[in-house]
Image 1: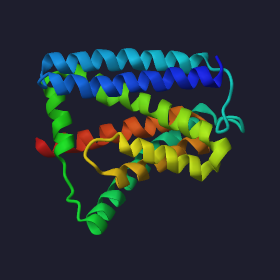
Image 2: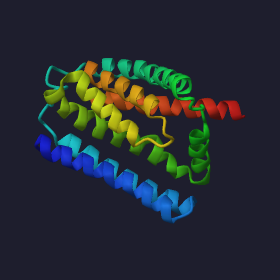
Image 3: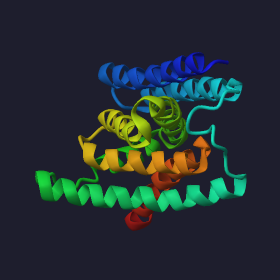
Image 4: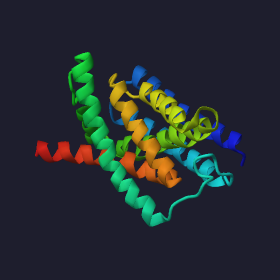
Length: 214
């Protein structure tokens, strides 16, 4: 599979999921059925994107210099979890200091509440959507922009676009998170590192709030 076909497949899978989330929750109440439909669409889109990823045999500009060993990818993925959490904290502080934007946990509580309503929804927001985001924004956008804008320019553009798709309006925090994830990918040459960092940070935040709610 060529880089162009791979990019089209991954971006299409991501947009199907993104638009489905918007439309379904726009016209259906949040409940077991709507959450289940979103989960099914998200998981199918993730499988399609991962299949396209496995068919790609051409390295992009990030992966061409080489890919670290699996143990190193896992190690940097775990380090990336701490980096993502730090970026979120710094971003939240800057948003509050610069823009008087209050820190809110409503989105996290909403996610946890939705997973209580339909536990299968965890597969969507805890696995499928983060994987789709990493394949779309880091692998495709960042990986292909590097040849045009350079490493920092590509990371910044991809991170800003990533931030625009995140709910809650915390674009600065999301941009910093995107830059950390782009660094993880660039450093190891493996998108799996960024996926570990993204998914791991999300799970850590959920576990923190669950533990403090008990």
